[in-house]
Image (cartoon, rainbow, N blue to C red; front, side, top):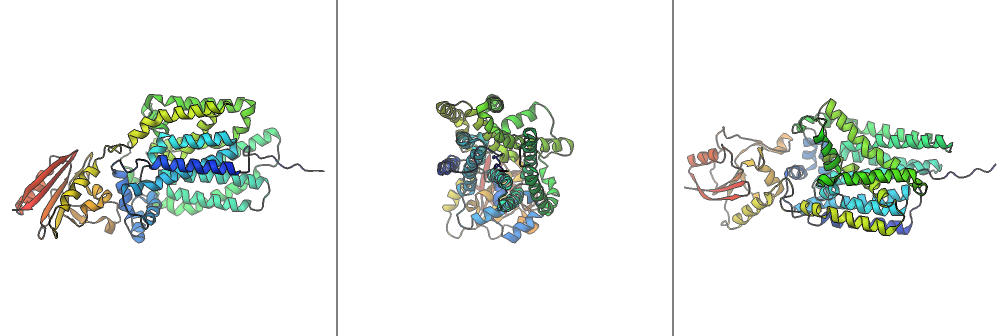
Length: 518
């Protein structure tokens, strides 16, 4: 009896032609260019300051810090530590890895959707991904969000390939599952929420098995499912020590208030999480996704694209639902930025919608309209104060210019005052982001430095404690936002040691004062 070869289960094509690779590479370059353009314009802000606080440490110092605070981000800090071994520091170089990751995610999304739904949806998906507002924001962010998206797409592409190789009884199937396991571990260490994709993948495998049962198709998905279980168990075992460390650091999420089910949460999930800045227009992409899903299920010529929905929809829905449930029932863990890794799969659903009609001109026109629609959001993300209204670069530039005029050999001290908009923090954040402006200054508020205590930020004297000696200093700088106590109390303390105000500036929310000896 002749046995027929099994038809591909995971999509319309299991081979990648040269044209698809060219499209993937071209869209990857597009993603990098769109992401990197204007990335040097916005001032750094609090999250990026935290990144630079971690990145500048040696590997042993970073290891020490990871056991006390920000362990969930420490693998990213390590990667950027290595990055800055070969490039100079600036906000542009800090953000460039995110733009590169955006391009990588876009290219991988093209390869993934080509396997699941064909060439046209793949190209549309890649282009849509490049212009999604959440993506264009993460591309200029010195944080791990853009990298997690690339890891999520890569992991899912490995799943699709590994399943097909297993169904085809290829000897190399185990290698694909090994790669899947490795990326699952690395991606989850990069950001622990990414492990939730494995849950979504389990749902996808279950759907594929149910579909095979309904069609009485062979071979069964049992073998791929067993491989997936093995990969999930190995991933869980490898992550256990990491999870134990970071789960003990939840106190650093003190800034998250209680999560309340209501319109506010709906806006955060359905607008901020995916379509940052779209406001009242946010329902449009959701309507498009709904139309695309229904058309794919109902129109016979589109049904070969169903595997793309079976892969994308669980990833879009499950991680968010799981984290919100935990946040409501246990403690808050939800923030829209944390789900950037799911954004490529929003692009998949939109790509299916924009190619539902058979005419390429319609798809091209829709992509142009979409790009025009998000252009104002894109430009707003690349204004000087786009990040939390930060103007740190202005203050740093002023200090740099003034210190450049000082006589050679001048010894400066600095009093880190309250950080604008975050007066419970200090302008040590500014110094972390713009270190050249503060290089060589003696820190007058330092009690114990951050490295020695394994924390992101130093332990500092309060205004209620005596000011350390200023002996040997030629000038003292106060940098911070005015409050009822500051700079009044530091000025009084300095006056008692024989200092007077020489010059002062008011730059945005900053008060910058230079003191000289009487």
